[in-house]
Length: 115
Image (cartoon, one colour):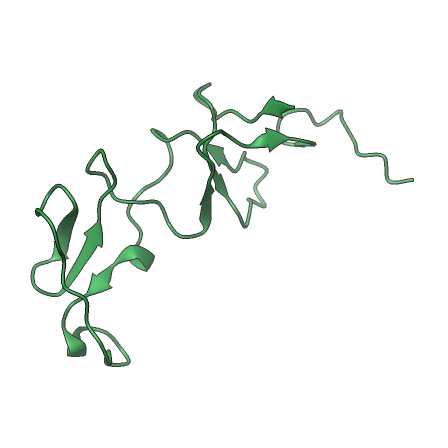
């Protein structure tokens, strides 16, 4: 199988699962994938989120290595091994890259056999 690649040419290890209606490729390498989404924010004050939280989670490990504040004493995020925020949870990850079966974003002249 052929592996998908990011627009930059590197192996695509992330894919935007909902896809794009604009026709752009949903495949991203680890360097190009958009990072930093509020879906990854962890709130540590009960009244900092609506509806109010029943439980809070406080960061563990070294700040700036394992996690960072988004808003001091209110919200924080986990960081990856390169101290970067993670992409939105709508992105799927495969460290070996995504295999291409049929991708109309790459070659519009290819059409699946629907018979």
